[in-house]
Image 1 (cartoon, rainbow, N blue to C red):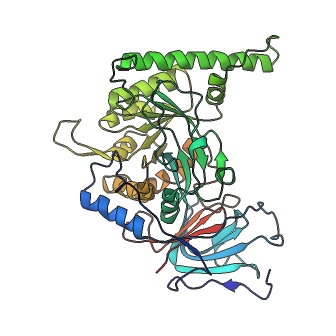
Image 2: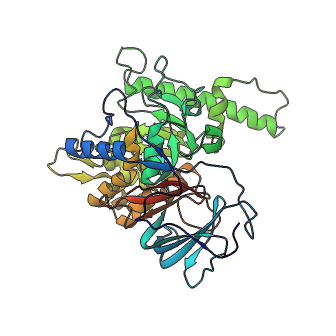
Image 3: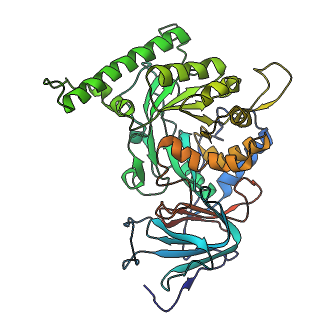
Length: 458
């Protein structure tokens, strides 16, 4: 590496980053439409779509590196980002600060007076911009090219979304361009147990290179979508609840049998059951159970079955319509609430009032709260907008920022790696000319695992 002095990055108003590879986003079979964004005006949906299609995403080819300690080893890239404002999320705001990135991780963060820039680091002058942690999305269906529902049987514990992910999927490029640097892609909600999600970074050549956790969560659906309208078992909530409890009981017994064997409390080795192997991870506390649920009745059913009865690490996802009426009960329990993309209600409440979902849950005492897009395509780049809508409808702005960063990371169990700007964490960063929640300000640059994954073209 050059030791003559810090290398200066080309200014933001200059086109290009070296010789970037420009990828044009292509659409097929017409305009993608979000299945739960009907509340947005058509002009807004069209505008978001046009921005996604016309934006040019500059991708720097990813390459693996090790997390360094001490001086940067030869061949490991180092960056010094001079920022006008650093929103660490967990450790306050730093004005006129510097973030040092070395290899895949954040090496140092502090004020300009506190941080000495190593001579061989590349300097990025973002002194008139804000630096924020990359966003974390924990309820998405992107990267699967629409293939996220197997509908023949209502209980599918053998399936996993990891087998579906296409690293070249164009919606992943959309996600990175908006600052979404961690995604939890899950199977759909057409069945009660659709399979298991996968947790990854949307930047890399192979899923193995992108992977954070092979099993992100056990995905359950309780409300509306999985109803078996053909008339078979699962047509009603009675049938769905019975099937789920029956499966959960079998999975729990299977897990306890293996735990007893591993502890020497039983001599006979349990018979392996492939259909229950992945569920063991949920019952052993290694992964959460994410439950698609909506309206107060079903939100309570989710808490009752998964938290109260089976004591699983539970994420209540969507929680919309009049689900906020159960918010006080959620605040009493160790459940995480993951809201979106429906952020208001006036139809179910029937009292001529408009309720902001996130604000209602927060005012009821729910602190473990995050926001999702439920994306199936280009709307994955709307995660910041979902947070902005929640703030517009009454959620505190600080909590809205936490909802798409550290709270989402905590919900899925990776807060030690992502969700905030802290020394030792993954160098997933957003550089932007203002607040993440301001939809009028474009993202200028995105780092994923210490690499420049996106740079806005002028």
